[in-house]
Image (tube, rainbow, N blue to C red; front, side, top):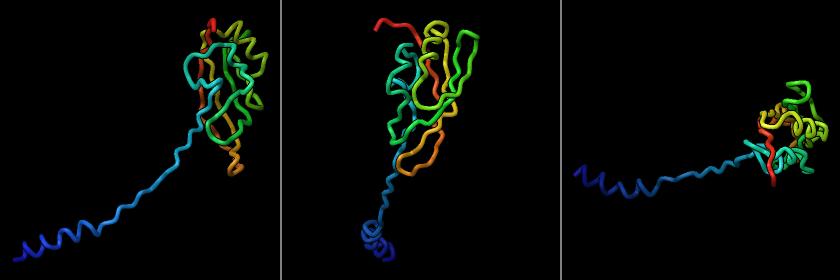
Length: 130
C-alpha cells in the first residue's frame, strides 16, 4: 500500500522540479595582429595599419615588446596599438625566425571605461613570399 502511494506521487514530484538556465557571456580579450594570434607571422604584417586588435569593444593603450634586434635582445614600451615602423624594420633585418613577445598589454573597455590587462602574446616573424 505504501509503495503504491509513493509510486502515485512520483509523477507529481518529477514535474514539479524547475530547472534554472544561467547564461554567462564569454569574453575574448586575446589580441591579434593582422588576424594572427599566435605562431608564425610574415614580418611585413607586423606593421599592419590596424595594429593590435581584439574581438571585444576595447582600445589598446600600451604594451611592452621584446624581440631580437640589432643590439641583441631588445625590450621597448610602446604607447598605442601599432608596432613602430623602426621596430618592424629592425625585426625584418635581425629578428627573422626569432620569437617576439608582447606583454603588459593595457586596454580600455568602451563599455565600462576601465583599464584592463590583456593576455600576453608571442609571435615568430618569418619571411614569406605572399
